[in-house]
Length: 130
Image (cartoon, helix red, strand yellow):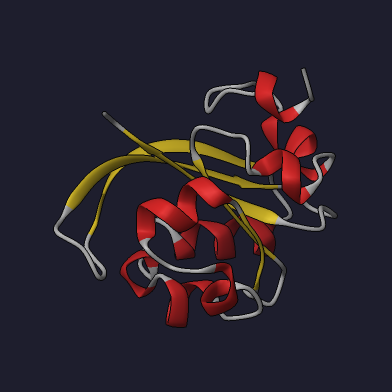
């Protein structure tokens, strides 16, 4: 069993564990993973999220998360929380109910927002039910 297959959406200290996973390992997870850098550009995007969102990695990787890939998250509930954590140099690990609306019928999900100072990537994790 590889590292990623043992990870769950609610795993404690998940950001460090995701940072340690290869992209192929992220593809084994049963929830969506979107990793982005300090400039907001998507650097990691797993198979689960690609299939669920209907967006190929080629359309997502290297593009701004909150203005091009997922503008439905460009608000105080998601994007602003990452900005605030970065400005304060604080850790962000928050799970919240959310409704995705871009390119799809409104879909209820759980989002987990992960960020800490000095990390290569910040993450939006997406847990869909059913």
